[in-house]
Length: 363
Image (cartoon, rainbow, N blue to C red; front, side, top):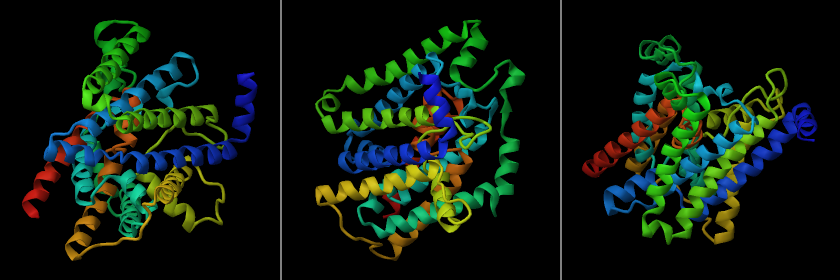
């Protein structure tokens, strides 16, 4: 039954990806607005108020996504090594530098890409401009003005883990290679330690446990990442319309969305990156209307304009260099147990804290 359904899905991948991606994006945007989930805001809460609840929500999302990917692999539904995150080539320099630049940039722009999607959906014209610049600089970093410098830097700061005996950069693969454990046992141990540890840490706090908003945000976003993996795995075929195994990410997809609308007549069927990005924007819009929060806003002064534009540019460059953002790497990528995603996650946190300190002095 499932095999027959999958065959139909592969043959109609564009429709499944279009509708499914749009629905996932709509729910994602709605959750952002309803719960005020914000990764940059979580660091700001810690630095300014000692409030760790939004950070615990972020960790909950990672843990839920990690458990979901574990289930996907154990049931044989998908092989996650087909994703971009598990290449044996560990681009540690890009993960560190890109994560730091992205982290600082998200502070200057008042939030990461997903937060700006939520604000734009709520009527913030400033965030629309920020998203446009993120998408533009992302494409400039992929294959434009900054591409050659990025490639040279990545080539100089990468390590081929296959030469060290690891087939990919998954933490469980590295553990199995180092200890001689079976791949299955190494994966189970890694997921129990990481996902279990994050959940225990998050729910050990009474303030977090007693806040349905933070709990729902973490669980909901984690499940949406799993839904993205399931959707693209279900329609995945290297020779069909969906040759990519992926889930939620928003730096390059911001550029993909701009490119799609500029070249609509060339390819009228949008891919997963575009549908989830547009879906998030409209999900935020509908939820903002429902809550009476929709209102037009823009830059408050020249200083605000400069900070947002510089931050947007940094997020575009940093996000591509690090292969993702606070969602694309810290949740989606980390759910695959990729070492590079862990490095990026930590670098974004450090960059965010540096950015917050710098903003305190600047302002």
